[in-house]
Image (tube, rainbow, N blue to C red; front, side, top):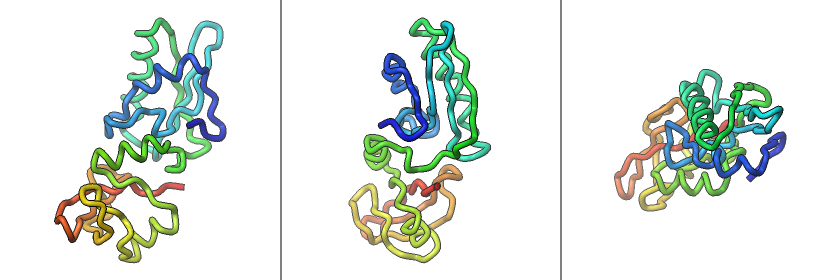
Length: 166
């Protein structure tokens, strides 16, 4: 899925789709929506990436992985980090949302629902194990800062929820 302000040469898409998010290896950087542009200019692929949040420790690894993937396919590259526009969970593709769910991480809800789930004690985050909405927030922070920890009251399994960022 190509989102607003995203420009990627079609020949580069299959290469970039093979670069995984180091914190969630079932997601490509394309499915996360962190690649804002990738264009060939004077023999060099210029790639711009946006972090999921400012200070995200995975961005250095992602930059190195992009450079390596492009080199393996005969391209020289330049990877730049851009902060504007800020990344939003709206940029996660549907394929990415499904991959998150299958991996055991509940994908982000819409902004209002996210606030109700994280601050209002509404039981609307679905368990990734049994699909029940009978879940409760355990901690505002899960395995990484962009996730919250939930527990299913039906199957008793803990799981991460990827917080909505707008």
